[in-house]
Image (tube, rainbow, N blue to C red; front, side, top):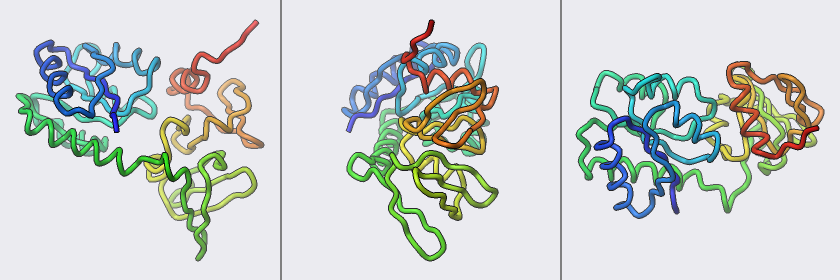
Length: 233
């Protein structure tokens, strides 16, 4: 398994070191080097990746603020010289938190943690999920799921032919379903991009349903949905 990743750090010595470490692992594929979060923002819109090695204190916008504001970001390993951001890292559910100077031993431990995470998320042989409703477990293919809606301590899963309500958080569903197929246009919704039939203003038409797009995420969400597939007069 190859993990596509981007290294973002404004210090050349730091990113070169991480790049060298990544090459030694044999399973980390560094597809881009970014010197700040602004450049990273541009690159992520052009090519999706699995993992970010993300510095925190950088020009223009910090790694923490970038992660808080970028919709549906890849998984992240923070790389920083400062311990004081550890709590933010925990709150943002990063995979690991590496303190500079970073030894290869510590880097490899974080890389292996990422490998184990993505291996557990590999859905290539199991493109389905079991959903518990009442006392029944129903097997549902990813392609059958149109959207998921948050309902306080429950979620409603809308498929091509039914609606199921189960006790779960939207975040747990986001973590379970493949990020390349599903997108979160709004804090209360997760949408299967294959099910989108039209885009009208800030509304996604998904089958017979209409899903709002957050104004703060609209640009990134639209770019991911359209992905250079646009014919216009």
